[in-house]
Picture 1 (cartoon, one colour):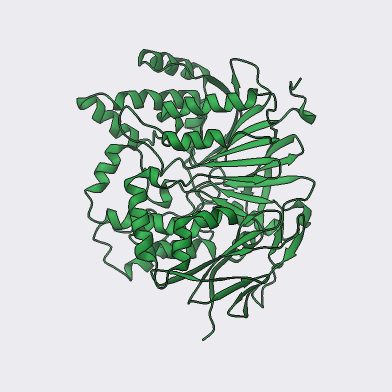
Picture 2 (tube, helix red, strand yellow):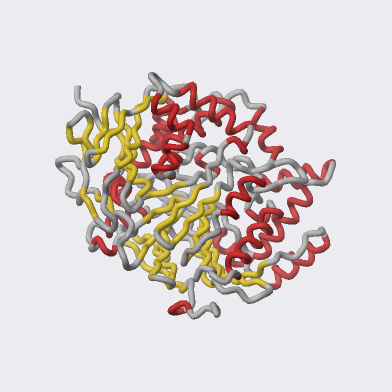
Length: 535
């Protein structure tokens, strides 16, 4: 029987001479891409491979096929789409990184057009020189707690949905179904086969409010179905998303990847143990990672799984990981992109409100419990709700932006909040880099209209002044950074692109209207020709 390609190919990490290609197949086989091969590994009876392609030439574009046991499985013979291509780094000219978050499957109706599929449709008509060189998916690639109607029907055929957790997914097989539903649409599949994609999870990849606080974790630990749920959530994330974030050298040094790919038989027990340790001790694994695109550095920060949640010591990541983040901002590059599924800079009134709430959660008795309830109810879990981390990130960005060899821009890329906006940050002293927060969410989802109105009100200066006085009374010190909204907030499904030419950079937001994308705004992220104070 011929082995079939179930998912992929997904083009993941691309360098100057190497690339990685991820696939899922329906049985064990050898996978061949441009003469580089890998045997599939097995997880819960599912079969996967990550092929490391070597020997490519810098700055080239190479069409490729995927062969399973010697038989061509991709491109599909009847496809009208262009062949997938591997475009290596090293080409001069404009660099484009597209990003966004919060994408429900494209077939789901009633939530507007899918901006990512609209982008893929337009891409098929563009010259290759105008394609993006990278795609960054900033969380909520799947919705484990809010599946589609089709998936609910599929779940009902597996188990009794009257029993907890009801329509939420429970195990690896159900997670695998979510990815299959989300990634098999032909245009999206072609896009992912052609544009190198980096990813990070957010809460809905696991469950709404995941790791909001220690109290949340204690509540979840009482649910008998939760241990299997969280372990298989992390196993599926490792398989479907995390592996492709790593380059060939990192894969070679990754002990769990080496163990799994060399394991004879189903590796599920090995990965379950790995996931159990990762959930029990967030310092046992680092989901954050770094990508360099020539003189552009992307530093992706895990703001979910690595949190420190002890009252009095809350932090987005542990101290060792923050030190790793700081170390990776060293070096010479023209632009620094910091990926964070959660925005760093929210409206001032919300930012202060989250910091006030963090203080209130530390109080004993009823006040603390009420504050904790509010924290979960209105999702007060962004950087400002981990104020020590917010301030440490501000100091890090100011330090990078102030040094003699400062990049032209420092830009934080985020999603999560189901609307789009941009803000520019300044500090008490003049810095050499322009600093922005760019938020793009959702790619394909919905948000009630009151969210846009709420966020417009939240940017209102008088309200910000009131919240600042309240924060001061609560003992929250003023931030070391100030910021102003420069665009938004807006609701429609959209994608954003950071477009870089040398030391010039700009942001382009495009909203989905039917099958097309319409430019919503173009924002400069650097001074023209980088006339920053570098002397």
